[in-house]
Picture (tube, rainbow, N blue to C red):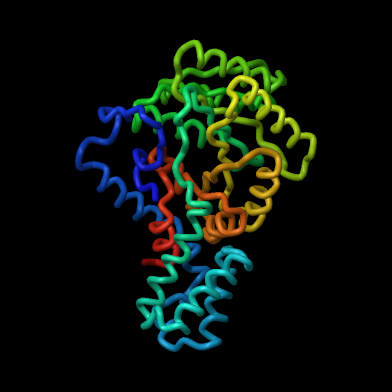
Length: 334
């Protein structure tokens, strides 16, 4: 599981710039601080789970126990199918005598949830090609542009990578301005166009510039689009085709930004977007204001798409690599 930026980023045979990473001894305190914020952010989700998941729940293991566990997980938006899978496995292991005692059962529950959150297991961000193209997609208002800006900053600071951002959201002048501010803060190049210009042409120009300058990573900020609008989804597919014409393998990563406050609607969004483009991971945002933290498990469990990035606040440090074990423990109040 990715616990640091160095763990998260796969740069192949290149070496991350150690001078750009956190000074020796600072990474662990930063992780502890983030874990504390994560627990605080998931407080609402834990309240939704309520006393149902207290240690006393597992003192008597019977049909009522598993029913209460299912209800609690569904309330936290883990999803009916994912919940059934997790509870079914846990119950089977208990009945087989492989897990005994309330604390052991609870610990095993954390492990099962963490396994689910890892999706297909490919939890790293692939930046091996040069330039590596990371396509950022999602519906309006999920925090795509902010996520692109924060990611650009971290790739530059934590890994010493040269970054270019492509302002392919040509519908909103405010999005271009916002991304420009982030690019300046991150110290990276930006390719932008006039409002209403074809998004594919912006991406084409960005990739041509990145190749000429030897840029390591291109982050493409696409326009927010409703997942039930076929015309907008086709436009996104067109952007993907433009990338493939420039780079045979296409985007090395396509990350969908999901607003965790949308609950199960986030699962539907991820499903539809994955049908239009090859979604390789999720950036889960706005966990600091939701009781729907379990949606991370639902998306990974039902679609096999791993959560790779997590945001728990407005600060630039509040975007971090997703650690499934840490998340599951925080969700249950460990």
